[in-house]
Image 1 (spheres, rainbow, N blue to C red):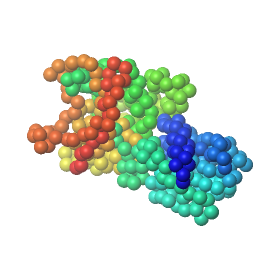
Image 2 (cartoon, helix red, strand yellow):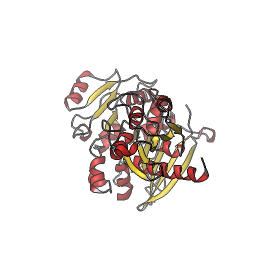
Image 3 (cartoon, helix red, strand yellow):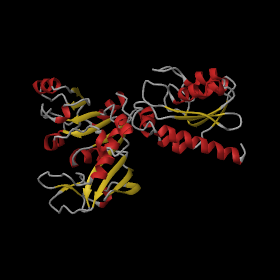
Image 4 (cartoon, helix red, strand yellow):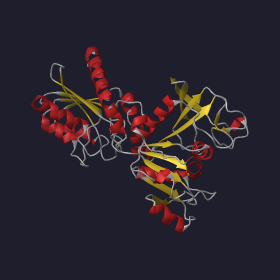
Length: 381
């Protein structure tokens, strides 16, 4: 391609990425995908994006708008068109039937059921295929989907709020509110893009949280907020001995709740929790007799969870981090001092500098009066 053609392809793929981002809160467990169609002269013909699981994929949405103008057109799509039949038909086949001349893709589909076969189907039909284009940005749309498809595990984020002196709550457990309203709205948006929210039984007993997505607290336009809260993430309690109170808020409401326990749990307690509306699953236990966290994450991946948010106290959050299960840390830093007797951010069994856990800060920005620090972990266990 000429330099101008390369620049045009990047610009049109950039537009497809913008469209895909509209599905940030609604496509789970499917990937977020955007599509743009242009005619032979490069004029925009149609746009589309995947809105929610079970509905038309981005390519189908765009083809519906393009209709007969799709014949001989060029299609720009952020993810390789699928070649298998799920709840909807294969997009690669639809593109062939529509008579498009060229497909430019952002990245190959990591789904083993596709993994290049969609592109090959296009080539076999005589369609020109080019890509990847803006691959890194296209991958950033779906980090959880990619990890689940390649490793069989969800992407894990750990969310915490702390004071300037690194404390999360007073010694008594009092913690409302460490961070301000803008940070709390940001957390609502983090929840909305997550397939599951994980907490520990100690947090349930101490704070009695709902852990749901509340549209009126997201600081978004009303329609977008309502759509984001339409499908609630799975609420997950790590509770090795089933000490969750049957009347806990997290067991109530429309959002589903999964309580993960071990074979040590009392059967009568299990019955009470199930009667309260939650699902209880028995998972393998670690050496300390607690729920094995890797087994928990594999179970969530089996349930098609792409992105998982950890919202728990210092002990469980620290255990996820120490075991190398956290991909991304999000910490809200509040301009407050809670004092030396207040509770720490993480409980970590580190005693020597040689044992410190490395992280890499990737973003830092103001959120209201607080700062949000985003970091990736470099921990291998």
